[in-house]
Length: 312
Image (cartoon, rainbow, N blue to C red; front, side):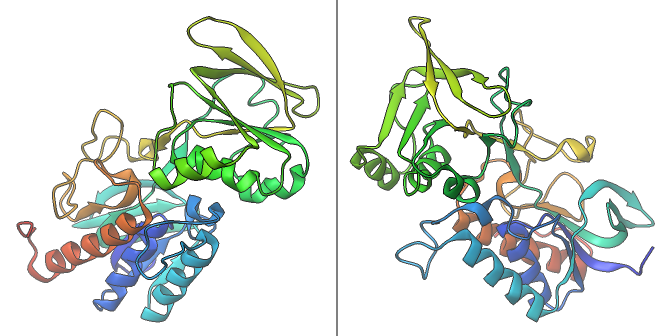
């Protein structure tokens, strides 16, 4: 095991990167377990709205590397390891990852979320063969074809808008009777005559032998089913927090997200949580950035005094 860090940050999304930047700027020896490509899910987003300084939005594949570069210049150490467990050890915290173990005086959990799966026949069998979770990655491969997006929230609308720049048509399938999300996104989706909306409906099966050829859609109220010819389907049905690996170490809410106070402190002393993995997250990029700075500040005070402070 290497020598002890002041802070280990688990997760390389925008919350984790922002925490690494703030912690390193505070002079703490900081290591971030980025878990592969720093930036997480935001790396695949073409335009992120609501980030101060970017009035026209900013691509996730631009914003995340910029934040990573800042954190690196501030002195944060990066590991591409994926956290596997967290346990108390020797008055500190032992973080076990795919690239070894780290001993930390304090920890920020920013492990984020993953997209919920459709949970329908054909989804697993055709994964990577038309079943996708990244429109910006796969849209250029679908030029002039039809794609189905399951889910009419922010992520579903963003995927549809990314796809429509390449595909002939998008069929957006939403269980409720309306789109649910940011007004700006709703306006853009409604303005496109190539995004067909099927409300009150759900995807019930993905069809095809070696690749997706059709998506079976059922109208919830009538039970009527229809096969939509399509070359791809994108699941945007919500987000599942990446907390199962914690094994009950910290208190979770009913959705599996980490309970925190106003200073983002968890039920485990010396451990904060930031970003979408925590309860009551705003699920916005700007919120994740603020979370990272807040958690780093809370832990800086804890490391200096040996106690949690009351939230401001």
